[in-house]
Each structure stands twice: as C-alpha cells, then as structure tokens.
Length: 489
Image (cartoon, rainbow, N blue to C red; front, side, top):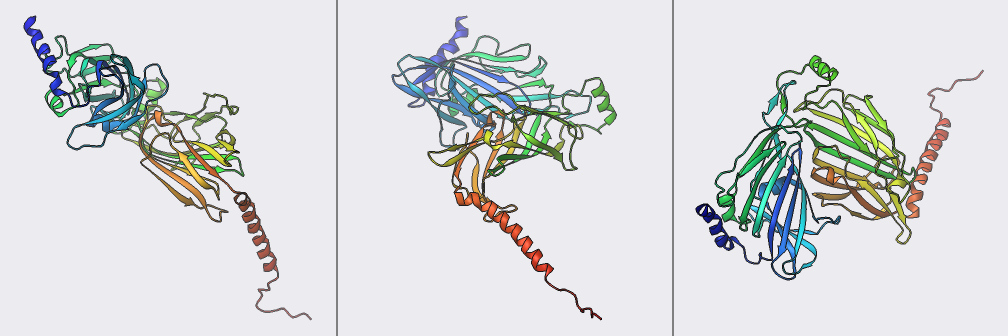
C-alpha cells in the first residue's frame, strides 16, 4: 500500500511547479461537473468549492478547453444559493495556448481561508453527433458525446469528478481513462443506471497550462440512446414591427427547421409511419408535431409554409396579464407539419401573430421616450438556433433610438425600412446571433421618442393620398378623350 501511494505523494510535492505566477489566490477544495446529455443542446453545471489563500482575493479565474469554449453558447456564473449573476471578463485570445481563461469578479473580497461555492452553468450546442450516422424508420437513435476528462483550473484542486447522465438508463458504451495512478487508486470510471462518473481524482495540480494538458488531459466519450428528436433551427429570421396608431406589435418568424438525428436509410414509407402512429410507437428520430409557447393575449396567428396555409395546428390563447403583475402563463400553439420530419430533413415555415403594444411598451414621461421590449426568439424545446437575425422596425419618424441587449450580438445595424404609405421610412434595428438556446430567449429593450409631427405625418400622408385619388378622378371626368365629336342634328 505504501508503494502505491508514493506517486500521489510525489505529485503533491511537485504540484507547485505547474502553477503560474499570480494565480495562487485560491485553491479548489472540490470541483464537481454534472453533464445532462440531450440532443442538440447539452446542459453542463460545474460547482467550484473554492478557498482563499490570500486575504482580499476577489477575482476567480475559470479555465475552459478550446473545444469546450467553441461549443459553449451560454455561460452564467453565480454564487450557490443566489439569483444574481457575477460579472465575467474574457482574457484575450492567445494562439500559443490551448485553453481559455475567464475572470469572475466576486461580490466582495474573501478573507484568508474563507470558502465559497461558485456554480457555473453552461449550454453546449452541437456537442453530440448521431452514431451510427444512418437509421431506418424502425431503428433506434443513438448519440455520442465527447469531452475532456479533467476540468481545467489555474489553481490546485483537492478533488474533482465528472458525472455524465443520459435521459434514459441505456448507456451503450463509455471510455475508460488510462494512466491515472497518480490521481486515484480506485476505479477511474463507474456506471450506475443512466449516469457515468469519471473520478474522483485527487490532488490535481494547476491544470490550465500546456505541460499538464499535454501529459494528462485525454478525451472521454459516452455512447447512449436518445429517445427524442435532435432539433436544430438552421436559420431564424424574426421581424418585429411596432405600430402606435394600431397599438400593435406584429412578430413574424421565418424558420428553417432541421432534424439533426441519424440520416434516413432507405426510402420513407408512409404506411410504416401510419402504423407506428396508430400503435403510438413512433421512432425517436421522427418529429411528427411541435409545441411552442407564445406570448399571452396574441391574436391573428398565422402559420404557413412554402405550399401555403397549414391548417393542422391548434392554438390556446391565454389572456394578457395586468401591467406590473407576474404572468408565467403562455399561449400554447401545437403545430403539425405537412409531413413527419425525419433525420437529415428540413422544414421551412412562417409563423406570425399580433400582440397588444401596451403589453410590451411603456411611456416614460420624464424623458418623453417609449420603451418597448421585444423577445429575441421563441424557444423551441431542446433545439439549438444556428443562425438568427432579429429585426425591430420602429414607427416612422422615431428619433433618439437606443437599445439594450441581454447578451452581445455578433453585429447590429441601424437602417431604414420603407413600406406602404411611408414618406421617409422607418428606423430598423437588426441584430445577428449564432448558437442560441432556450436561455437566450430574453428581451431586447429599445427606447425612442416620436415627435408630434411624426405622429401627424401618417394621417397627413393618408389624407393626401386620398385627396390625390379624388383629384385625379375629378380631372379625369372632365377630360374629353374622344377622337371625333358626334354631330347633333
């Protein structure tokens, strides 16, 4: 037993050699990572139990591998038990290192030997892939998820473990890590039901450096059955048009839906699909219908695709909530496409509705500005939005336009949108996003002011249009277009 513990003791002696200067303000007493496997979106929750090794420590640094950083679309850091998020600051990209650092500013400095639990919640998009890559209508759907074994950190870690859990207890296979005698004397991986646990691994030196990653880091994977369709939105184009004269907020979504599951092997059989539907045993990679949560109080809902109007839908509208009250209810829209969407198939459709502007807008008398909230997207459960374009069309004549986004956009532009009965056009804000999930379904706040002359411009233009029509009609009736005049006897 003594000889088996020598590597662990030796690593504890040489651990400081992995540390980087200025990064010893904390140490990790424990790191626990919980991975909830899904389809296109994987939910990861990492809990850091930290202890201050210097008085006044306030900035804690989180490390991510480059691949993990690339597929992480949402990252939120909070103190365990609190609702408010902590500020984050990304380090500059360095091509010479294969990890990424993020500084998290704590609410207050920690005293020497003080402890705190930080919860890092992240969503990973396109982190799984179908394996096998093809499946017939009768086959099941299996996915594979791969990640790094060790949770990187610039601080010494006493113990860490990773628990990967599928939705159903049907794990096909998983990786068994090798060469970890320096960190554990027990089994490197265990499986229980739907969960695969890597660790615990003890006495890990600072790992956010090239030396540790090259020597100890290794990929691990879990192959599992997934009984839900893998949904992706290849492209989402949202247009929100604000009308003060009509007290209306019109929202229209042009959606390209993609089934990212295994590609259909062979031909599609309508008979086989009807048989599965009758016995309620549809293949897990087939999407027959879709349920969406829409805002309350909506009206004039429409749903059509490239062929035309689709009548196979059902809408249950919830009344609008009074101003200032909390309303967690939604209008439920059940969509049934013209055909079942199988693996590798696409379905393009348009969805739109009208909502009372008073439900989303307020007027600030102190500044003379309107403030309108517009949702970035309507979340599709379990789906990742690859590319999104959100346009907000303001009333004609709106000035002093300002906006606040819940998270940074890839780009934002201000242009002019011209439609019928417009004279100078309407301001149009356009935001572009990538890799969105349900956590991104938040609101963009736009503030602007509309002068009195702008309010009167529309009825003036409409009045002039009608006057011009009548004037042309009067003039037209008085013009004699006959070639030869008839002689009267």
